[in-house]
Every structure is written in structure tokens, then in C-alpha cells.
Amino acid sequence: MKLKTILIAGVVILLIVVIAKRFATSSAPRMNASAQNHKPSKADRSTPKASLLAMSEAIMTGDAQTYLDSFVFSTPDEFTLKANLHRVILAIDRFKAEARTKFGAEATDANFPNLPVCLPKQVIERATETITGETASVNVGRVSPIEMTQLEGEWKTSVNGFFQQNAGALNNLVVPLGRGLEEASVGIREGKFASFRDALMALKQKSR
Image (tube, rainbow, N blue to C red; front, side):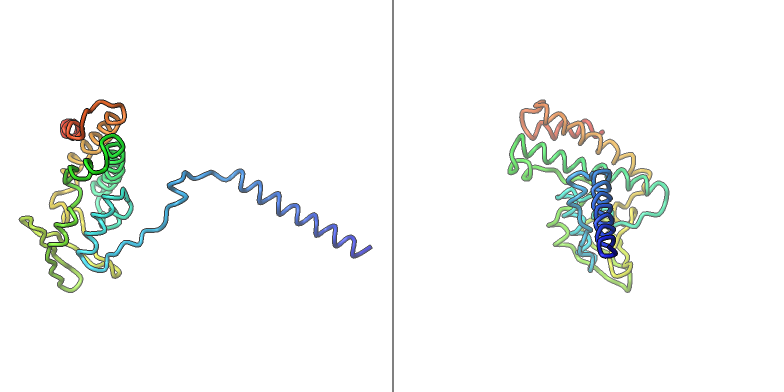
């Protein structure tokens, strides 16, 4: 009798566990596909140039988080810029995806413009870096080099150090750019442009 009671109790407990698991699974919010497939970034920031290359690659792949993780944001204007840059990175990715579908990957990639939020890979590869302790300067051919700082083994830049402008002025440039990219993406999808060049012209006008 005691054994039978123990077995019955065990079955009841097992049923409770199974039901609880099914309830938790069915009631838990479902993540979208991109969220489910997201993995923590493992960008190489072991050198100043490696960090800049990670930023360039992030622009190409639409990885806003990796791009933004290469900066140190500190002021309210800079955190506003961070949100605006996030919007721009995603908008660039959508624009390129729409353009590739409509006009082909070769035409899109060959004619895609250099945007102010990043540096082309070939420019970074040719650059020279000068490291002094935990600070570094990367000469990419600008009037002033990109300034970087080593934090916990990773090289990162700042808003002023990379863009050489303050966050307030940059927000005035980045917001129209994000809006222009989004509107041009819709235009491509709706068949408003006969060529990728026409789409770029519209982007230029919408980004002013």
C-alpha cells in the first residue's frame, strides 16, 4: 500500500511538472527570428585598426550593436546620437536589401556611396596607427586622425574622436539621413525608381 501511494504521488508530481513547462512555453512571449538568432558580438577590437574594421564590417552587415559598441558615449546629446545612429545602421541595411532585390547585388554594391557614419575598409587597411600607452591615433587621410582609447583590452573611439564634430551637430545630419534611407527604401519597393542611380538621387534629396 505504501509503495502504491509513493508511485501515485510520483506520477502526480511528474504531471504537474509537465503541465507547468507547457504552460510556461505557451505563455512566454515569442521573439522574432532575428532576436532568436542573435548572438553576442565577438568583434576584434584588439588593435585600433581592428576596431575600425569591425565598425566598417558592422555597417556592411547591418550589425548596429557591434558598430555602437565601438564608441564610448557619455553626454545626453551623445546618447541621443547613439539612438539615431542605431536607426541609420538598420536603415542602411534595409536600403541595400531593397536595392539588391530590385537592381541586383552587383549594381548596388559597386555604386553604394560612402556614408559619413563609416570608413571604407580599404581606407582603414591603408591607415597608420600610433599607440601611446592606452591612447592611439589612426591616420586615415583626414586633416585630423581618429582618436582612440584602450578600455579593458579593447580599443574604442568617441564621438568627437571619430567624427570630429560634436554630437549636437551630428544629430542634425544623422536624423535626415535615417529618414531619407527609410523613404528611399519604400520608394524602391514600390517601383518608383528606374535605376539604382535614381534611388541614390532621391536619397540625396530626402537626406537634406
